[in-house]
Image (cartoon, rainbow, N blue to C red; front, side, top):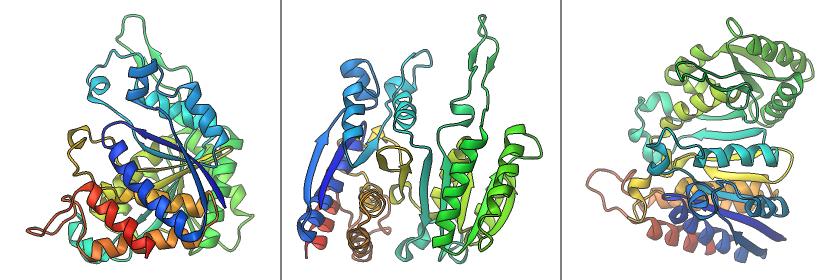
Length: 356
C-alpha cells in the first residue's frame, strides 16, 4: 500500500518525538512492504514566527492531499505569557479541526502493567482500565459566537452553541465504537443546567433507539469527573461535548501515570489526524529527555484508523510494551534508581524491535 503522510512536528518537543515516530513508521512500512511518502509542513508557534499564520494555507493543502496527518505538539511561552497576542499557536489547531472537518477526537485510556505504581490512583483501581473517550471537536464554547470582550475590557463573554446534526453524528460515531467493544456507552452532559446539554440528552436518547444492543447511561459531567477517579474501570466508551471532553480527557490521562503515554486520533470529513495528548513541553525541548511513546502510539493508531492496517498497529504496540518491559524508557517513567534512556535511544530501540 502507498502511504502518503503529512508530518507536522510543531513546537517544543514536537520535532523530537516526531523523529522517533517516523523511525518506527519507516521500519513498519519496510517490514510490511508499504511504499511510504512523507512531507513536512509548519504549524503552531513556529509557523507564526515564519509566516504569521499558525495554520498556513500551504499546510492545509498538504493535509488535504495526504492520507493521514501525524501531528506533534504546539505552544510556546512566547505566546502563553502574552495575553495581548492576537494570534496564538492554538488558533492553528482550532482552524485545522474546522477546515479538515475533524469533528471527533478519539482518545483511548489504558494502563500498562509495568507502570501501575506510577499512577496517582491505587493499583487496584487502575489495573485493567480500558476505555475510549469520544469528544466533539467543532462546536460548543470554543467555536460559539458571539465571543469577546466589552469595549472597556471589564466584561468577557463566550457562547455555547450546538446543533442537532452535530450531536447526532458524534453520538452515532460513539455507538459504533461501543458496538465493537463492550457495548456500554456513557453520555456525559450538564442537562440539569445547560440548554445545549438538554439538547444533547434529547438527541442521544433518540439515537440510542438505533442501538438496542448497547447499554446506555447518562451522567452529569461533575459526576463523571468523580467517577473517573473513584471507579475508572466502570467506563467503556464515553461521549461528550467539546469543553467537557477537553477537561475529562486530560483528567483521565493521568490514570496511566504519565502524559507521555497516551495517543489520540481526530477524525471527521477529510484527512484524519493523529497526535499525542501531551503539550509542547518547551522546558524539555532539545534535551533528548521527552517521552516519545505517545507519539509512537499515535502512529500505531494511524495505521489502524487511517489505513485499516491492524497488524501494523499491533506490531507497534507490542514493541512499545516490550520497551517498557525491558526498561528502555525515558526518565519520566523509569523506576527510581533505574537507568534511563534518551528520546532518540527509545525510538531507535522500538524501530529495531519492529524490524525484527
